[in-house]
Image (cartoon, rainbow, N blue to C red; front, side, top):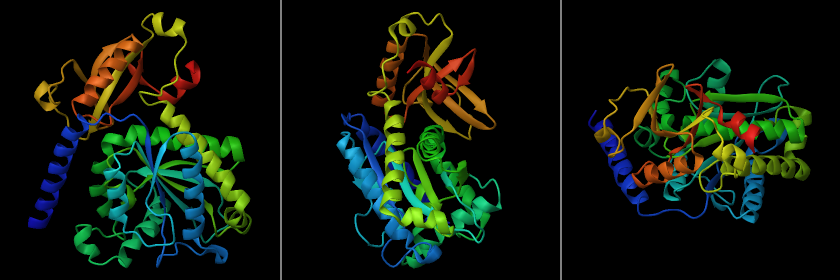
Length: 356
C-alpha cells in the first residue's frame, strides 16, 4: 500500500513539474519515438523460424530514416539487438518530450491468420485482444525485480489492465487518429487485410505521456505473410506506409496543420465550431478555472463515461490557433484542436479529408 501511494505521488509530481517545464520550452520541431519491440534475450515470436525482434528493428530503422528525411526528429528506444525494459521505453519517450510514440511488433497465431492491425491502450474488447497483450506484456518476466517495477502487474490477469487505462485516457483520441491513419495506409498502399484499430492493455504504452500506438505489422506464423515480413522488400514497404501515416498525423497538429481554403476559414457560417481539447478523464470535474490551470471559457462532453474537457469556442480558425497556444502555455502539452458540427464532436479525420 505504501509503495502504491509512493508511485501515485511520484506520477503526480512528475506531471506537475513536467507541465511547468513545458511552458518554458516551446518546441520548433516534431519528435517521434520509434520503438522496435523485443530485442536481445527477448526474441519475440518465432513464427516459421523468423525472429520478430530483427524484423521489428529493421522496420523501425527504416521508418526513422524516412521521418528524418522529412525533418522530423526521431528518437529510437533501441538501434541494435539489445534488451530494453518496457518501462525504460516509455521513459525514453517522456524524456524526449515526444509528440507520438510508435511501438512496432509482429503477430502470431495458431491459425492461418493474416493482416495488419494497430492498437491503442484500453480495455480488452475480447479474448483475442487479451491474448495479444498478454504475449507482449509477458516480456516483463525477463526483467529483474519486475514485481516492484510494475507495482504487482500480472500479465495473466485481465483485471490488472484496468490500472493501465487511466494513464493514457488524456491521449486516447489522438492515439486513435494516428492509428487510423496507419491502418488507412496499410490498406490503401499495400492492400493488406485490415484488422482495424483495437484497444488492449499493452504495458509498453502505459506510462507514455503522449499519443501512443502499437503496430502488429502482420503474422509471422502465416507462411506467405511471414516471408513478406522477413523480406527486405516487405520491410521497406511497411516502413513507407507507416511513415506516410505518421507524417499525415503530424500534419493535423498545430504548427504544421495544412492550411484550409481561405473561403472556408473566413466564411465558415457557423457550420463548424472549433474548440481546444485540453484533457479527458473518467471523472467529472467542475468547470472552474482552478481545476484547469487558470483557464476559463470551459466546456465538457460526456462520451460514454469519458469526460472530455474543452477550452474556448469559435468559428474562426485563426482564433482557435491562439487559444491552442495559450492552452499549451498553461501546461496542457497534449492539447489539440477539436471540431464540432451541430453541437456534436465531429471526426477530425473526416474533417481533414473534406477540407485539405
